[in-house]
Every structure is written in C-alpha cells, then in structure tokens.
Length: 91
Image (cartoon, rainbow, N blue to C red; front, side, top):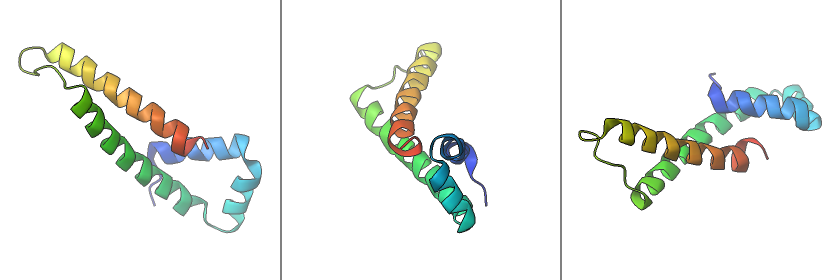
C-alpha cells in the first residue's frame, strides 16, 4: 500500500504531535490504511481546489508566455497545497 507524499507528512505529524493517535493507529493496524486515505483525499482535494483557483484566476497563454504560465500554475498549486496541508494533514 503506497502512502505517498501527504501520507508521509501525516505520519511525521502524528509521530511528533499526536503520539497517542499514532500509537493507537499502529496497534490497531490502521496506520497504513489511514495514511493512504489521507494521501488519496489530499490529492483529490488539491486537484479540485486547483480547478477552482484556475477558474477564478485564469493562467496566461502557455504558447505566448510559458514562463508566466509556469509561475502562475506553480503559485496556484502552492496555494492549494497549503490549504490542504492545514485542513487535512496537520489537524
């Protein structure tokens, strides 16, 4: 079972900040399914949030301004990821 980037971030958070929850999940053999679910949910929410942000703030034309498009997309992805980390991974 792959836990991915957000699952690993959640695992680190639980280990350092929520030791009781981490121990409970470990002992009940629910840690890996929990981490996989967090990772899957985070990826889905980032995609949805990125789509909404793109509707609100359209990207420049990629053909005419590839650097501007890349910067814009990176900025939107960073915003979406920051929201998800706060709401899902570090709660």
